[in-house]
Length: 467
Image 1 (cartoon, rainbow, N blue to C red):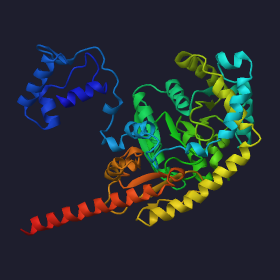
Image 2 (cartoon, rainbow, N blue to C red; image 1 turned 135 degrees about the vertical axis):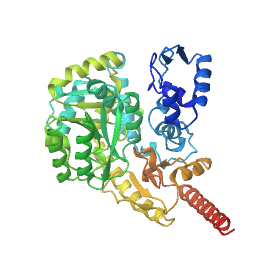
Image 3 (tube, helix red, strand yellow; image 1 turned 120 degrees about the vertical axis):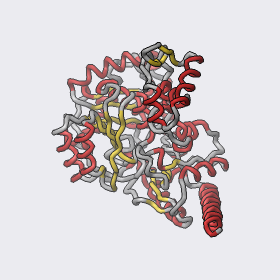
Image 4 (cartoon, helix red, strand yellow; image 1 turned 90 degrees about the horizontal axis):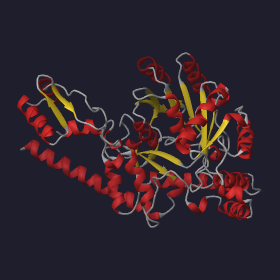
């Protein structure tokens, strides 16, 4: 009964779908026919399914409300992307968040934000009250066009559309290019909210192993051959969660594969300003032919300002604008105004230099403190806030996260980022959120407790075997 209800909740079984015969269901679930008959009859009595004599059992309507947690492989809540996000967003100020994906509030550009607020308080009423134009704030788009050009990405202001966030940018692209059942490639591991968002679009997600220099090209080519994906979503600057950067060689090989496979690449560049020496951008090599470049400002200016963008080929912008209007109408002007004022403020460049220096210093400190308790980095990132770390042998990241949460420390277990659930011994750390001694004290205690439990369990097993 639970299996059928789960499939209905995930919309695998839609209204009027014929269920497998009782014999087929019995074989599939390795239970007796009488068990399936009993389950079907109980579900029919509850009105979940209906019986049609001589035909079989069918799902009753209407369609179930979408439950994202019911779609795809079942995960423990400690590694479910939606649950991890909730823990980071809902906790109070006393909770430590080394697993979250943003800078502490004190690290953001507060002085520039306050100046922007004061400037806008004196602005024309239209700036404070009106909808934005369909493409978004013209001056910010012109600024973004110049900014992208400095990274080798040629995008006229008319090829840039502002969005409410980077997440909305991906959502609109998915609405534009995907149908339920299409296949999307992601890195394994990748940013965990990619998994949650793609679930909402009812697509098949295939993970490709990520290496210190980019996706494994041979596995990428095999996935193209086997699954014929429509999209590939990635970070080619600072990768989330690994902190790796894409090499020029891997970038060229990826674009060659995309050219022969009708693949569209979505390049999420949300961490660009954390780089002192920018990595290659796929959009720069590709000229926005098969690559859609997106970004936002929540990680560098303020998460309270929801403002992102899409840069893409000119003949796709009009349809994306229509989708934006259909789903969020005109968007707001205030956030874009504030972002532009902050980014063009005379103190912004110096502020980001300070942030990059602080991140580099905290990266060194965090690595040393983690290694002292047996946690080792997968690589040492060139820039950014993320450390992708392996736990001592035999230690489960979900169990560590569960233990640490009781002590007010939110962690990000590896399998939240892994489509294949093959990162059970990894944690992602945000070095900017790992400055409190309590993080490492709680971690050390949790590691010690799990190690002791494993030893005791092994000892009991050995005794039982001996007897």
